[in-house]
Length: 273
Image 1 (tube, rainbow, N blue to C red):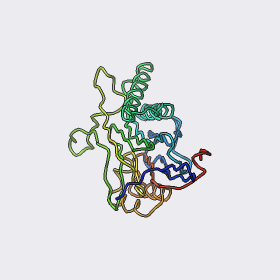
Image 2: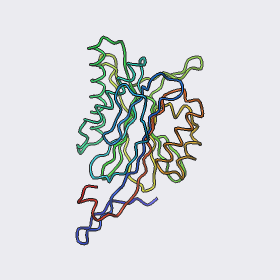
Image 3: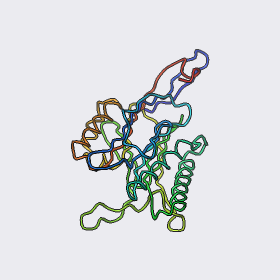
Image 4: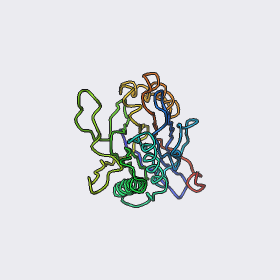
């Protein structure tokens, strides 16, 4: 696939810039008493005590400064899990991602969020609170990802769905789900966390999905690919959530769908739209 680059031609004020269309849903599911998931979606997240998004969060944004999207799936008991996910979301919303070294930025974010959660558990004498993290950062040049735990990042491109994130899982015992080997909320005295990172180029038309295991454990990947194929981010987010609920909705469901577009707009750059 031919890679397109954003173009700014000052003489005739023609601008070709990347446009991200995105949609985000967080749903409590059918079996949980509360929502331990949280997210960051262009500086939007949920409060610690929540029952998910009231409606689908959707919008479009031109990539002029770093655009950050992420999903956090809390663990460690109902209240502790949602607090850990909230603290990670809050840190992502307030973190400065404008450095010229995006991968280092993502790693620094994980370290800061880990410290926030560990500080909270220590101050409140809680044995454990943790969360996964799966984060995508878009800048004018490339896409950068970072994940820890088993929340997933997929790319749908040229009719193929590929998992870009790397699961941090141990060995399953007696048919149970494998335990996490990495997550946010681990004191440095116990383990130095090692998030997975990667970067890639832009391709117009590609779609990205970030999700908690409330989706990935419920819905087969071929179904996910089929839904992403022809749907807009809004349609895909709503359809994927319905599929997860129809397959049992055993866990909280949080997902973000992002589509990359290349858009000519001679006024958007200057007006900041």
